[in-house]
Image 1 (spheres, each protein chain N blue to C red):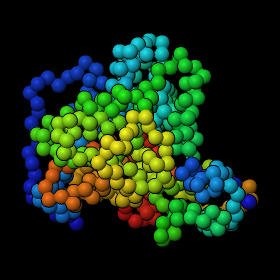
Image 2: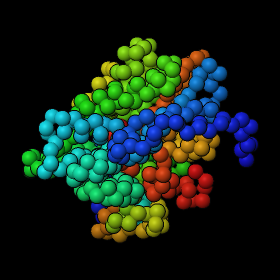
Image 3: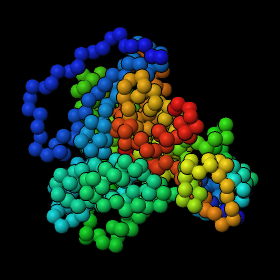
Image 4: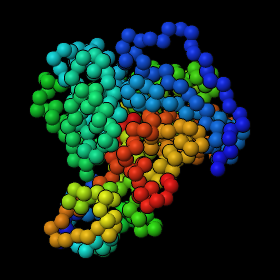
Length: 91
Length: 328
């Protein structure tokens, strides 16, 4: 299983949990598994064409998947995946 | 291929009065207004659109105004005095502004920021000599607010916390400067003011001033259309810690903006107007066009909170489409 860190705005899908478990051999497969466990999650992470939304950053063990193999980045048991949006603050 | 612009205005000649100031913070405010003449998408000819370019402030954003006012207010009340450190939570621009004013006045500054603020912000804050404390990126600006409260509670006598989310001096800065500037720059013709909301300080203070001059002026807020968004600097109020200075009932309208629409507007403003602004400005301009489409006549002022070069390392420019070889 992969540990998935969930940002505050998406915790409404995980009953408030900041960390959940999911599985998949790649990030794509893991996102699909997240969608099965927490319906609605995938549409927040990916656009209609299946690509990760521009303002969403996904890290595997602290590495941005943009600099790995994007959605095809491989995952193994014990990995940690973090979903981090661009930040919000205040005018 | 864009055609060359046939009509160019003449540059404004240098002002004749002395331009030197005795300190950087004296240069805060009096930012220029520029007419948006191309990114207006077929609006009625009687509708004029102007951008208020807050990136011209010495700290590079609209936040210089409240930062300076809150520090001046703290000094006047005796809450800030030598020996104290300025501490606040910020998503970036307020931190840069506090760091700039603190440096100019000789006060140390500590800033609590989400760990995922842009590299440019981290470097600028460090360049002004301020200390950054990073909060959990997963918790966004609310995480920084909570961590800052904890740090303050542990050593309340050590710090002066401007508390931009709850300090009346924040909207007051805009009531005293941004509002009067817009009134004067539009020769009292402004009919709509559009700005993003984060603390709400800009829109509350500017709106209050403009409505006092002319109650018919419409105050329109742009906010992210969802809690999960990429509009750095803006807050989705329904899912956030609501700032004490924010009073939604004083707005005439609030428009939710999708992150992608705001990003695309940033690209357009750069290419079609020669204005490289940040994503909150893109969001505000999308909202302004929505309002403008319903009008036959009007003078709309949109607040462009900062310039876009502060975001060159962020998803705004390093987004997925670009990395996939598509031009944004």
